[in-house]
Length: 540
Image (cartoon, rainbow, N blue to C red; front, side, top):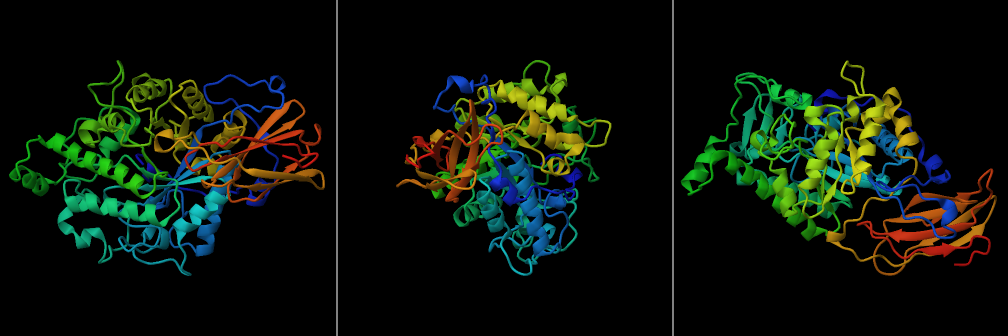
């Protein structure tokens, strides 16, 4: 991400999975953009399921989030992964966006790219004892009812913080003509067909082999400009501050060979448009290829948060990804080449030149196909610097998204401040924003057929109702949505689809649940007909 080289994960104590699975379901919050539901007015019919995408990025590059340092033992890597997932579940998040390809390398076994040094301490070295980290993350996330989106950097070939040599099999060594030195980075030239093909091959390999819920790419297309002749990050830093880059001489990205080859082949576009078209072709190919492999895997992009200069709302100024990164995010929305957009809106609501709400409205207005818009929040700006956010700023930004019908979620950059509970942000989110579980919004353009109603049987045992859950025939079930009524209050929980049993403990004040209602939810968020359970008799 734009800011990821500045953050580090610090170990934090998380809730245990056992406590999460045995705990009582929590109160239903406001459905985003809606008014409170009166439980007394609903009788035996529960309110609609709350729907909101609530995610956090987990960066592996430079060991920002996971693992906390390279070359940890396998046991420690897995322990840290479980702690992150437990914290996400405990905060009522419902998705993790895990970086699986930091720099043309992999945190999973791959025949295409070497093991990442950020995982094992040396590029090309496999974990010992052998295990598959991505498979572990997917299984552990799904066991908690969380989605796992695999995050790929599409073009970076070597990060500035890398220390160990590239392997012989690394793309920079097998395709040296397609990789360019740019400051302290190596970059796959988007104008080279081999670069685009490698990224497509890597992404589709993961889609085929792993049970992921989404594919995600970040804001690094052509690299952020750096000063010539050094290796500074002036444009990137200025972009984050929300101001134009200072007067400077930028180092030109060295794609002259691919540009000349394009012209000699009869190409007519001017250079900036040609660069944008190189990226556009990758975006379209990924969207088509992912859904050809698995129709339910959603494709998301998290571009820089300020749009094209010629379309910006009055008063909005700042860095132009359109002119500097050659990322035409407005076109991708117009063409419908993505399932969700997470623009990095990394500025406060009150910062007029980059106002969070104004920028959110801008992206919503660029969305004719009504794709999901789930803005990225700069939660990591809660720190000990003079420019630190307060937790209230993040809660306010979540509240803003809930006033916009087209904005149905958020993604936090990154998990680190939530693990650290910086300035009480985790407690604030749980108390004021994420009081209850929520389903991920449905994605009807990829499929709208509902699964069959589940089979549910309840029995009374030891101060609790024990539910047995089974999917109906036909479509697979990813989750169960479960409502329980205690007195005049409805409570909502999300149960992982792999669980066959669930326990509803009696409430100390209200006693046992009087009504239980269950529905099945598929991979695209489609909800089945609901089944009403009468716990006292165990009948459906």
